[in-house]
Amino acid sequence: MAFCEEVFIEGLTEQGMERVMSIKVAINGYGTIGKRVADAVDAQDDMEIIGVTKTRPSFGCDLAVRKGYPLYCTYDDESKIAAFAAGGYQCEGGLSDLLEIADVVVDCSPGKVGASNKEKYLAADVKYIFQGGEKHAMTGMSYTSSANHLENKNVQGTRVVSCNTTGLSRTLVPLYEHCGSLSVECTMIRRAADPGDSAKGPINAIKPVLKVPSHHGPDVMTVKPEIAINSMAVAVPTTLMHCHSIVATLPDGHGLTTQSVLELWKSNPRIIIMNGAETNITTTAEVMEYARDIGRKWGDLHEIFVWEDGVKLDGNTLYYFQAIHQESDVIPENVDAIRALMGTEDDWRVSVAKTDAAIAIYNGI
Ligand code: NAD
Image (cartoon, rainbow, N blue to C red):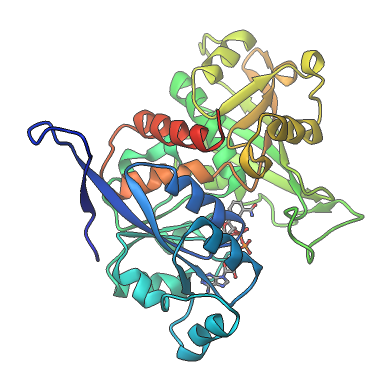
């Protein structure tokens, strides 16, 4: 494993010179998630992208070149590496060459190919972060920023849970921390495909996920085992967002009202609360239009969107809807997870604030 380089900030006196760790981050799999994680990492001042991989020369390579990220081949075979030059791209080498100079690799390969990649990371003695397409059992650790940042400190590898599970964790963890116990039933109304996918469906059906319960709810327990949660899921013909319909049972004596639940969420990061009737943002289409209007890169929305007028606490039962931008809510969590693994920030709120401030700058906010 390479070691973080100490970078000296220009303009500081020798005595006051601050040593800043620049964590060397590799991205293995530069697709929907990988390209976004790369830019979010690149925006931070305590980490840098030292290379991204593509399986073969394709249009995604142009983006990496434009961003100035060194391009590597996902594989070590000479013929596959040579294909990049034949396709007009400068390729710096294979995955092993990249791992040699990395402190941490963020694996953004398609779900379920992780196990064989993990062997390569262990062999290279490099820290690794997988995504939600992989099972918890493969890494033995999972991560969301608000649930278990500190438990991930200095571990060799973890998994940032899926977009749905990240979204559930954002609103349920603060509730659990207030109440001390929580039992949840929820339904994930899932987008069928990402906007860039041309091969997935359904396009004319509602498809129940017949594995009951679905993995999304129980997956929350990989980061916060104290929350008792089950979920069901249906895929619907949309590409924009997921929508969650959530029913949470709070313990007696919770002391909350509908209004104070909203205040609790507002005091936590990466949750946006808006009134549908007042803003006319009543569907996921308008939520995404809002993200584009405020100038978010790729039209992303890292925050979880909760409709204020769709929240109701009735006795011990809390009902609410939330919308999840599947391509982007996990992106800032990956940045925080890097700090956890590298042991450079203990306080999740400090990491979140740092991550989000840097991302806000690249969004021009
Ligand atoms: P993607 O298909 O858009 O990108 C995957 C990239 O990995 C592609 O560039 C592909 O060429 C490359 N690749 C293929 N085989 C590889 C290998 N063996 N090693 C390294 N790279 C390889 O996929 P994605 O949507 O970015 O998903 C990546 C991961 O993130 C998955 O685990 C997925 O479940 C998870 N995730 C996806 C979303 C989403 O909405 N897209 C949301 C949250 C989490």
